[in-house]
Image 1 (cartoon, one colour):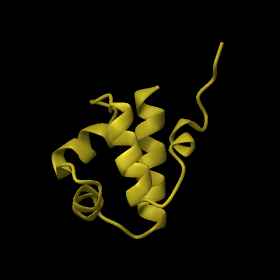
Image 2 (spheres, rainbow, N blue to C red):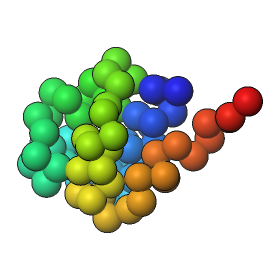
Image 3 (cartoon, rainbow, N blue to C red):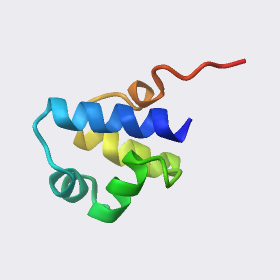
Image 4 (cartoon, rainbow, N blue to C red):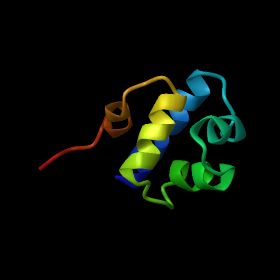
Length: 70
């Protein structure tokens, strides 16, 4: 699941032409945190996901596209 969230964040960031440092600055988190989230090594809290979504001008739900609920 973390890899899917991270891949979706990376895809949106790249779609907007942002690098990790720019996203980090806009979201108020560290570039290292962005890197770990995108690699699936860190599980972001809901508040962090909201900040990232706001910085990427999208709904937080977009990050969960592709996750199967059973």
